[in-house]
Image 1 (tube, rainbow, N blue to C red):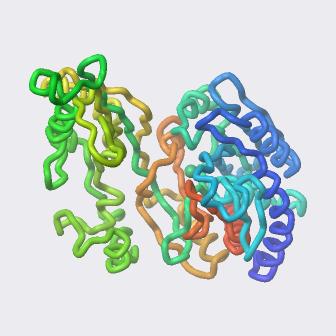
Image 2: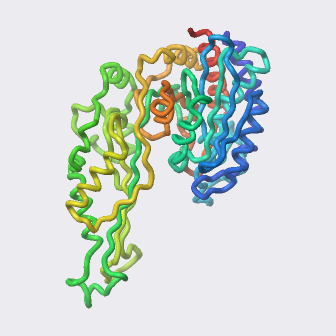
Image 3: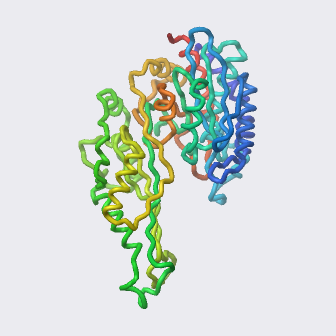
Length: 450
Ligand SMILES: [Zn+2]
């Protein structure tokens, strides 16, 4: 598409997206509480049907999954768009400047839970496809896979995808579910870190005990947990679970080159982190820690009394949440097995419960369909996008690369300050228009690809 055509087409599509996004944000489809997921799926199905696609809703495993498709013209490729209609809980409510489920338009942005993550970004794809169908210019096959459990770790998506493997066949999976790069420039991402989320529990007596009358004899679950944790990771941050790092793969030369061209604002990062210097060994570029190295984070720690003043007790239990980001080729199940074995040896009283497990995922930088997508984003935004080997966070990208066996790219459309998962989440109209333009041009470029 030429620039004028692209801009005017995106502008027209945007006019339709605004009310659709406000209505979509109005459905408080919160997966963590199982609320309004049927309603979220139904509205999503309706929007896809209005776009000119054939729609099915798959039920039976968790929240409904919405699938929509349109066959490709002969010998043209097919894009599988992935998105989610579920959202995070809105709390704390008093931190919102307008109600989280009203989709209020102010100062050039639509505010509301899900405005960016992921309803707005998903609607950019749908609007682009709808516009191309209406004007007889859709030159590729399109499929949409929209789930309602992304915010709780997509526990059923892999199973659903493998049951519908034939229907989901495509040449490329495309996800827009993140902000663009920090400097507001578009970015194309070739993979994600995985996640293993665990809870550790230690129990002692059947109730909290007086620390004077029983302290000295009573079991001490808080200390037991602290010792168990310190056996898992040393002070320098090195994980002590045997075999933890064995599968960790160094970046390939192509990935390393990508990583070096990505701007890194050291001062801004230091300021954000409240540090004088970055931790870690200097042979790793800081980006490497966010993309190619695993983490072993304590995301919650609880025992005993934490209120004002003193309460002299021996607490009867202690627990913590571990949030472990995994990198290729670590597998959640083998990391969990190694960790269980280590803890069983160290202190068998520590109970381990798995809360979420998502493998990491990677698509090779030289995947043939990357070039037309890079070209498309360059045309739509006027600047060549940054190429980023990995997202530091986690999406169910492995469902595409592993379960369905296709290349997968993440092309985020959200503004850098979209406040996803936080109060005052927003999607700017500028970011929406740019996203629609990217989707229009991605379809156009892939139509010409063979
Ligand atoms: Zn999210």
